[in-house]
Image 1 (cartoon, rainbow, N blue to C red):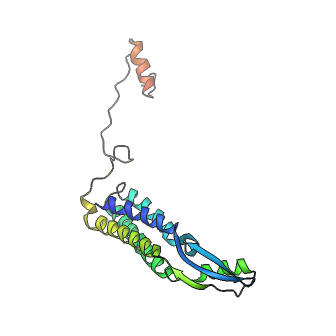
Image 2: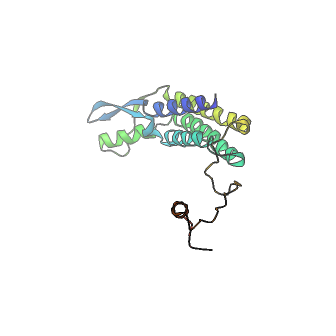
Length: 186
């Protein structure tokens, strides 16, 4: 459930930041000039945190114990950050004012007939799903399976002790060389 919520939330947040968040008109040379801004023009925080959330979502299954708690916390914080950034940017006019200034050549130009779309709230909903995934990972992550520790360093696996190569049997000398042993040593 957490994996599904996190992946869906990141996809929704990334999709929402690529959509039109606000539109308006600027007065250029006596005429009205329509302007629009995407979510990534208004703020890059939701898209960046969605990528962090995806990375944390994958990492939460790769780590164990305390590491899992840290990564799950990062996952929850990235969801909360997406929600906060999207909701703050929902009524932000500065990106449209910058476009109006570029279009008119007047740094004091502003946008008139301003309207906002619902996409910032969709991005916030994606952040809520990532937050839910992080909270689920914090609560139930200790019971989830982890990746195998088979190839990790410091494992307590007993190593086979090599028997000395019999000099009368050349195949044993070759096998000792294959294992990285010195068959001539005593």
